[in-house]
Image 1 (tube, one colour):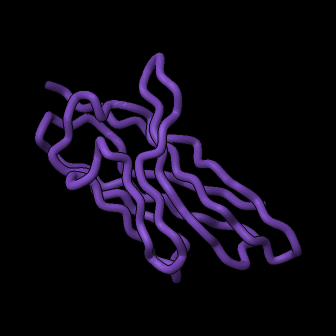
Image 2 (tube, rainbow, N blue to C red):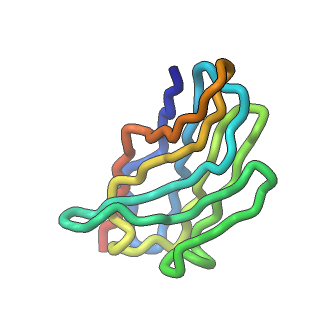
Length: 120
């Protein structure tokens, strides 16, 4: 019914930058909050950043000042601009969205994940 497709992950040196994108498609009436989460090897999935449909943002303390989340509501797309990357940012990054369907209903949807590797 609804898919989230992430892109933009890869290998980068410490101090570098990457931009992740996540596009939603399917039977979408509207999207409430969208967000990025990450899961490092051997660790639990954790919140990175979220953004509401109105543009209010929330960040994990570990990424404040380095990462910026934004969205394009017309394209049902959320972005994560990551700068000053550190080796500890290495993880699989997952996109998340709260989707109100064309047909009555609400889904929380996850993307398949994109790997970000930061080398020291």
